[in-house]
Length: 256
Image 1 (cartoon, rainbow, N blue to C red):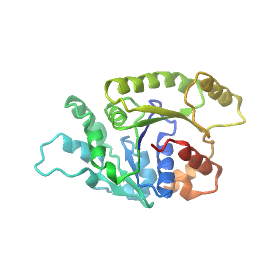
Image 2: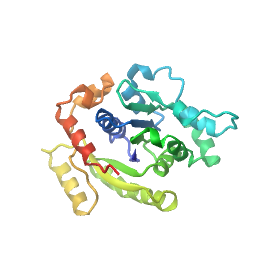
Image 3: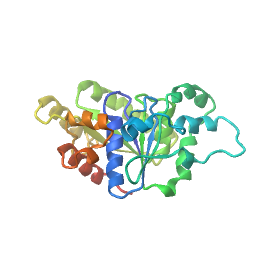
């Protein structure tokens, strides 16, 4: 199962959600791969910590290869690196992704990521794709390669307004490029149960018939500690409330 975590709005927790769901999958014994398509590399840093420095393979290298003729091209598996966590692997980001974007668009390499994941499909049970906060070449490539789309959502009016445009964009990709793609659900992130506005906004989304997933992910400073130590919540604090929410959310997602 391939899932893309996508929202055009920044700061909604895409990388945090990607890495924590992937970490739960891996801990449950599922062979899991994370792709970090955001040039900022937050997922790469989250999963590798200081090991992210000095990587010799990354997704920029993979995409750059698609622009050249190689008599003996490197296989997709050669761009995958292990993480410190059992069953969890990563295709790392690179700042060079920004430089490559224009060339990849002009050469219409939009299907190369899907082809690459098809190549290694039998090696992984779960694939999670972290995307940039924009509907650019890399995000479109991810939506074309994925089967499910998860949408992180902050409980404010700006996020709500952006949500409708996002869903239209996903529908367009589905219609034009990827009939298998489905919006699996909206992940309510940094939820403050005692505040009236988050409760009101979420209730309105549900009333509109949008696929809001449960449980909601609580707001907690523990996440910053998780980032700093490069330890997803299931490894940092297995009994924390947010950890149990991630496990429950993971288990609620469709397995087919």
